[in-house]
Image (tube, rainbow, N blue to C red; front, side, top):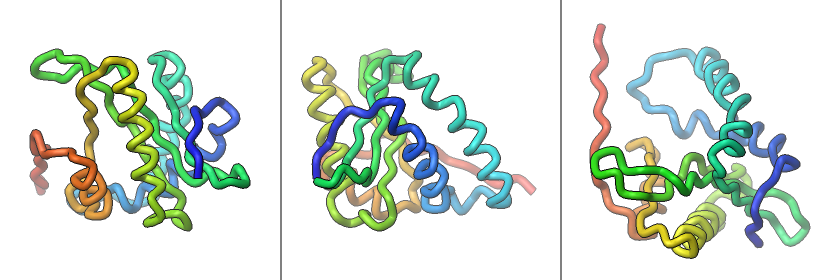
Length: 157
């Protein structure tokens, strides 16, 4: 496996995978049809590449030795922590193709993002994860991430 910086040619892969990973990321508290959720996700993704370019975000692509893409990570290196204003890099999106999950792809992408942030002189790396996504939580904890805040929701009938 190797990791390289992504470019516009990677967008079809990222777009398709960005839709595929939605079921594992949705909070069970959100009572909306999958069809409506997918429409929203598609709308969001349509502008994502433009946002990546406008914010000087960095895309990392993990691929096999035969150059088959396995997953991607989008890193926003100019984020500011919302309470202190401290500069941090922020993992905007991380997705791994189902056939490559549990093979170290997510870990390798995260390590690449961390190394990039360090090279840029950034001292913090942040991300958000759904609390029910146990595989992702375990990965992030094993990489040294600690819970800093809780995002809470209440269903109003």
